[in-house]
Length: 281
Image (tube, rainbow, N blue to C red; front, side, top):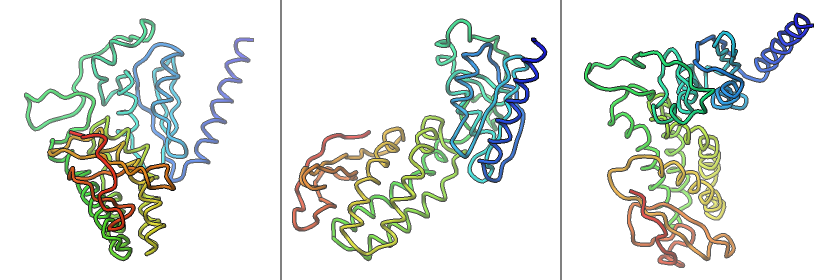
């Protein structure tokens, strides 16, 4: 009976991996050691590593081997392992933060092995599970995205549909140029969640000169940009502002580099309608 159960489990595992490969385009499969102990670990490791139609992780409790199947045009091994490290599980390449590991249930606290997560040109630099990048690299990855967003906002303030289309095209280019492996872990996690929406709304704004249609998509774009800028380190404050009249009286928000209100949803019709509801530093 035990032999039969093991055989059936192996078949189910093989079928699940086969189905995963079929759903993921440009599928690449790799095996990597990820440390953990039990079924609870398996659930957390796989949940952290999985991304619908992009990455699938299957972790074996006995061998401690994680089978990674992913679309190599959209992600890579490092990004998957960093997400897993963020929830408390070391791999051969990345260490989980000590405070996260310490919060794991007792049954999940595996024996940690001393290791260096990544190489650094500065031997004195202490590395965690994040990518080996300088602060300048981390900041510069998203700065063009934020700068393009603010330029788009300014075009909408001027009620200039042609300019807004051009600025949205530049924003889309900036989004596509972001190298995800250069982002800090917390930023990377949010980026993966908002990326598709940022692209979709930027494309809609770029593809039309209709200012109303552009403003409708700018509302949703601003929500996702807010989520992203909240976890990003900024040299200067960003102001999160609200217009109660926009969106048919339901209200709408936007981000600005200045505290003075310049409404992108009404322009000169109601230029100063709104208020700053949060200062992001």
